[in-house]
Image 1 (cartoon, one colour):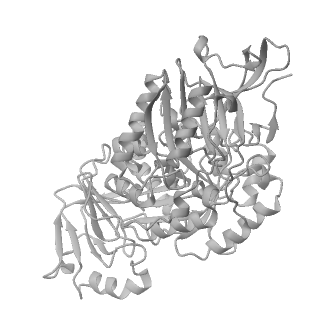
Image 2 (cartoon, one colour):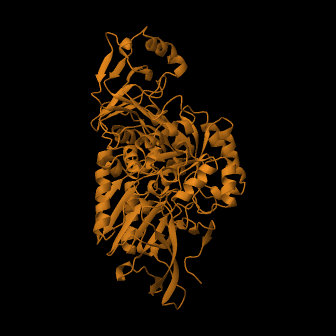
Image 3 (cartoon, helix red, strand yellow):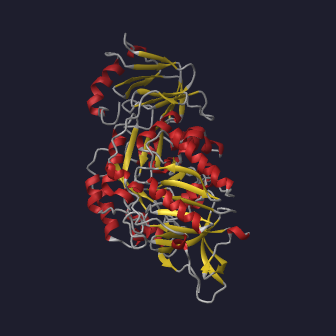
Length: 601
């Protein structure tokens, strides 16, 4: 069963009614378990009957639904909980295709995902979104797609491979798997009444679909209120209780994320656990999870355990990962609960706090058991244009990474991007940096923590390289890491302490056709090939996770101590999250949304 073959509720209703009434047998009956009803936060010794991918009967005794061919499953006292929903995430952040991402997370109990493929949109445009949509439609789970809204994310401050406009949004709204508009990252544009942003939101609202939010500013004054008035229905960029409270007070849903590098649940969930606000308006999500996190730690089950560990009632936390999400997207009658007519997505688990994911059903069929998939996740045939996206004019040399100093200077005051561990925002720092041979130098090899950072244009083969400085990685030897994942424009981003290593890493990715690589002390230490759009691999998650872990170890070996430092690396070009970022146009002051000089005067 897949979303393409799942019958609609009206089409399935005659059969479901007949089964619930005892006139026809169910395909599957599960008995002997404890059913968690998220609508009422009750746990009852009930039974369920399933047919045509949906729940037909949920009640105290399903014996009247059993026929000669019915599969009867004994739950042996385990809990039946709804399949988990990820309300906001990006498949590409896992370095995996939709099929391989699904294969990685379904065994962890995630049966529904709401994904915004704006990463591939920046590289391949509407055609790339369609490829993601089409692969998602054939999976044995529910993967809904939000049409990306902002490519580029900040017009005038970056150049993307492709652009998305209102006409693209209007076309995508006609596709069967599109559930709404992806995160509206251009929050200054919305607050200023930008016609393009308003047209995209209008095209979404006219067909009754949800507009995703992204308000990445601490300013909760008139600009925030103007943004809320524009129509975004949720936001996942909050980092503290005040952020969560401000959003729900404006009628938005607060999406609290726990990704590979974003730890924002604990600081915000106190709005429910301590302040006592209505939990129906709070939702759990991941946003960005790398393959290593998925394979090693889990997906939405990890978020749910974390929310419970912070003091949230397990049944309230479960609502935040199931029913609240379904309700938000207008799909409460379709999924998010164990109730008649809904998609038969459920988990068998022996604990509501530890959440061992022992067996998983999605769309009415058993899809995973004891951490392993039991059905395939079909792939589409990814075309060659999606695999040939690293378009550099030439190989680079160390000279491409030179930062000229003002004439006669022995030292300069430079603006430096400051990495903040476990959070998406950066800090705008100022550092006094040395000058040698007329070039400004980082100080990471002389006792400091300032490296060079460069953005290498890779969409139109212009040969352009933008250079700046970044602090926080802790590298203490000749090293460079390059990645064609550089949210959101996805040029090539290179961070290093040695210009020669930076050139070698960039050239390696040019030859490879995309990915991530780290060179240290003259040698290639680790590489993750990402042949699809320079963002994703179609290899299994475990294989990609092993490559990614080798990369993380190589970063640690080079002196980096940040948690999930690769994610921090890849977001340094995200010019819609304060305070300071790099783009192909220069250094961007995201507090003002304008380009700024690298060298302070």
